[in-house]
Length: 176
Image 1 (cartoon, helix red, strand yellow):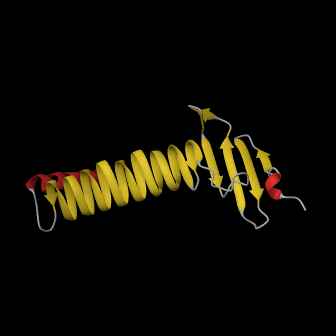
Image 2 (cartoon, rainbow, N blue to C red):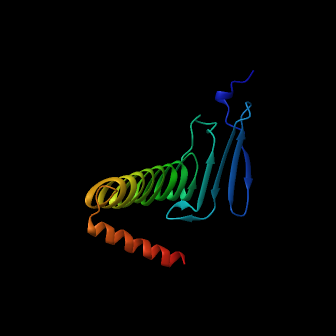
């Protein structure tokens, strides 16, 4: 009997006009799949997609690309359970400009836990401008909040009331 640990994995490799698929089906039925586009930008593939555990290492492969999609993803736009990039969407989304997820961080953060530098929107949020259930920051609209200008059921700073009313009018005008 052959020791599979000493054998290189027998990938199914499919070349398309857009990129290359590598697939491996474990005897248990678990699938490993990876797609990497031919084209690159700044050394990153335009698209990198990963799924499952690598048969070579037994661990997850981090998707790295302009658009990175996988359990763990890093890229300009990253989508994954844990995503890190300029725009990051995931259960944990850490983005330079936008973090979106259950726990999010970035210049703009949207999530249950939203740690924003500029803007925070979430259940617990921070930022210069915050809309949250519990908010901490500069201008805060929340059920409970702390900051420079706060609008809560218990505290209505005129600066916060004016700011958020004007913001609401801008949103209404934009939506139509």
